[in-house]
Length: 160
Image (cartoon, rainbow, N blue to C red; front, side):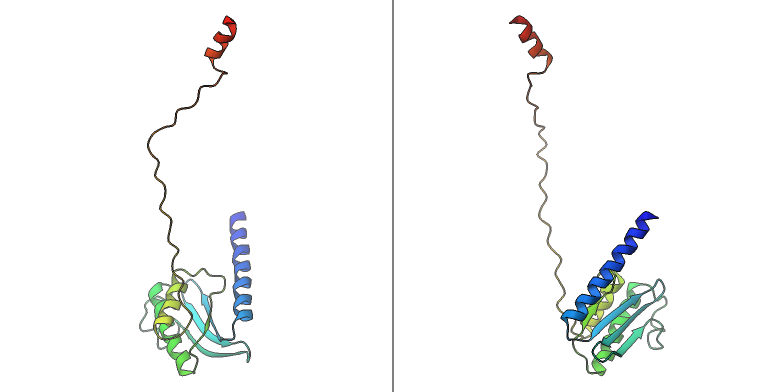
């Protein structure tokens, strides 16, 4: 139970941090994502006016026939494509991506990538950091230095 509680706290903190950063630093409308187990929802929100400019989810009439299950990456890609089309129709070309407490991974990343590919300017995708090559062990074992505390040192002391 303790682990679940810590994960919940981390999620809540991440959510506050991401949301405040997006609201504070951006003059663009916000592409907000909500993810449940069965569905995924996205909306473009103008925080200055406090209104939704475009919205899409796996429950929409347009997307529902394309997707059999709304809780996978294919469904997220379909929603990303539709939300980009609707935002462009509403005259929004640039948005700030608000992933909330979710990591940019899996369905959330798929939605953002699909929206980006459909023509919505979310910002440049960050390249994955390259891992430094790991040093391989040489296979030779280092010999331990003999210390003066071994049985040989006792014999030397006795001779003196």
